[in-house]
Length: 341
Image 1 (cartoon, one colour):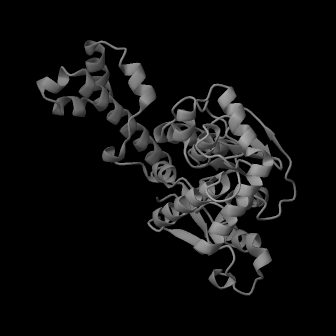
Image 2 (cartoon, rainbow, N blue to C red):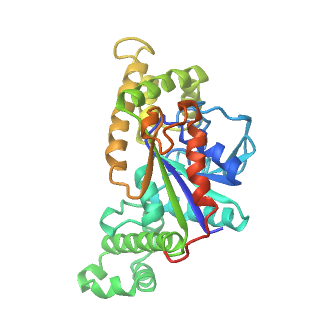
Image 3 (cartoon, rainbow, N blue to C red):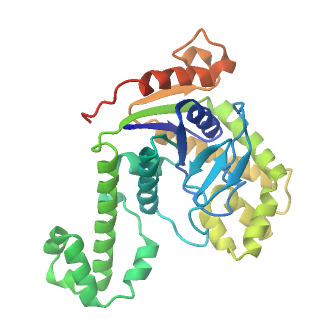
């Protein structure tokens, strides 16, 4: 099995629902590509469960170690780390690559699903050094080391980077830490590239989208649904369990708004400037950023989830949307693998 299926697009398009249907048809397992679903306990706010946009034969679910199982299908990269800790894009690439490899070893189809564009780009293509953010976990480890060990570590990790440094930089712990950080990230990025494109994986990218009006409507409904599921109570449990409001705000979107509510900055759930309105507006902004990001994504077969005229199978009814996508995937899935990539 040298194939990798990717389901991407903005929030509220039903990516996970569709991916689960395809996993049933093509013996696959899901790999979440979401920057916040990796955190333990961030369940309702991040939408780890299917949205219900497409009807699933079996919606029963349970939690495993590092994965959830929904309708008998494993969904990996859920519950990887405590939300109190920092988890970077490079941590994600390393762990997701390992998971994809293990899925392939079991003879199953890995299906990457998500809307975090940066994580997806890093997983499929790698990232340039200039885009590498600080790795707080690595920095904390390196700051404990003496100068001599920092120098030795960089020389071993990247002799080329060491040679380019002048004498002053070689005696500067802060610059050595950043150099090690960059070299480590480049290594992970290179491993990602080699494991996918250079490794000969035949990748099919399916994109789900809709008009802004439809996306806003779907996300607004989902906010209300998640509140009814207990999203505020989830935030209270996290706070009581030691997750600071500062850290909750760093986790962004829903949890940033929930932190303001718990802090008393937002006083009501409903009404003008209430939690619902503020959260919905923030998610609208996120959708706009997602749409801008995904416009740059190459080699994607886009499907509008409501407009049947955009389907490759225009004679099908809208309610058969998952079947339409499955037909395209089937044609790719049953082709002989192209190992020339």
